[in-house]
Image 1 (cartoon, rainbow over the protein chains, first blue to last red):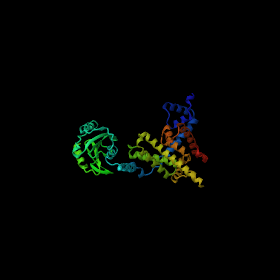
Image 2 (image 1 turned 135 degrees about the vertical axis):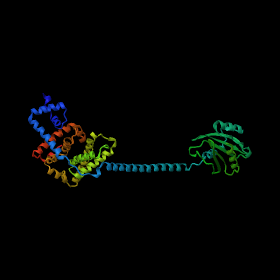
Image 3 (image 1 turned 180 degrees about the horizontal axis):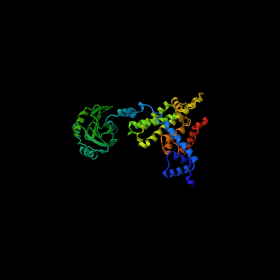
Image 4 (image 1 turned 90 degrees about the vertical axis):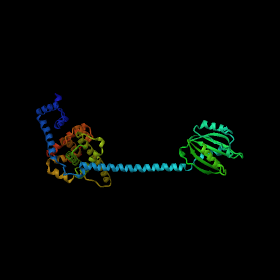
Amino acid sequence: MTRLIPTEHELHAYVDERLEPARRAEVQAWLAANPQEAVRIEAWRADARRLRAALAGFGERPSDPHLDLAPLRRRLRQRRQRRLAAAAVLMLALGLGGIGGWQARQVTLFAGMLPMADAVQAHRLFAEASTLDIEARDPARLQAWLGTHFNRVGRLPDLAGYGFQPVGARLLSNEAGPAALLVFEDRQGQRISLFLRSPGEHFERMPTGQRTDGQLEARYWSHGDYNFALVSAVDDTRGEQLRQALGVSL
Amino acid sequence: MHDLDDQQWRELLQRLRRFALWLTREPGTADDLVQATVERALSRRGQQRDADSLRPWLFTILYRLFLDGKRRERLHARWLAWFGRGQAEEPAGGEIESIVLAQADLQAFARLSPEQRALLLLVSVEGLSYKEAAETLGIPIGTVMSRLSRARAALRELTEGNPAPPALRRLK
């Protein structure tokens, strides 16, 4: 029997038509048996009805052009596009700044790096040294040694015509991989060196060129898979001819 | 929201505006509230609703915006009070006042607290389920029931020409 007495919440749900049909019938029966409660509930219902009636059309206004769906969507789309555009401009600015900065960094970083600077350096360190990896007076031996380390290198020319004999060679390495310093000497003990290595990251398409570095003259070029440099004394007049001979042959 | 025709849209707007008017009792503020609600809804395209759940969803957005505005207002009022300038409680807009005076049935309703008005609007006028009303107002369903009970009792009392003391308006 207690199941039949509706709670206050159920009475509200009854007014709002939110009860299950079965329960609704039970509440209806209970109200029929309790006229006092029925009056109270009916008053709620009447209040709600009056409220609905009084508020029908309330807040109605002819038409608000600001809130018509199509123009509103258009405005929102425009606003979104403006935001996207602003974001894009910002990204572009940041991007350009970043790329520009990176480029500037590269420029400053490599401003001090000259092509085949390592060749000049190697010449300074080892050309006069007595300790080379191999002592090879015989050009054929030097060629063989070179072939074991650099399998795509051409033939070493015979420089005897220019007065130079091979002294030896030293295997070096740098960031681009193995490098070799080949040392030649003339009868007066004047030494020149040929440096070769794989192209470095920054000098992959190294232009042919020539530069003076202190007392040394470096002539450099690229051929095949390697970059070459011939380093000789600045005042050695045979430099250019040697360079041509090596360039043709290697 | 994108498959509504203009007629449905206008009707929806009117419902939103009615809700906003009774919350704010200030036509200007109500219009701003509706506009902000619609813009927010349209900008959340990821949360597209079907026609049935669209209405409660819009009411929810509007009510949240209303509460945010109230919070800011209270903060503002506290600052004003701090500087020695008190502010009158709940100034009522002219349009609402005239409508309320013209319709006896609304006089009692107008004297309910904003929370009670909001709930009765959602449940009795807009026909939202208790669950939807609870979600819209951001309160548990139990609170919806007890608030509904108090709101109906208060409305009854006010309608019977038994004006409650002004303190009733502050009831939650």
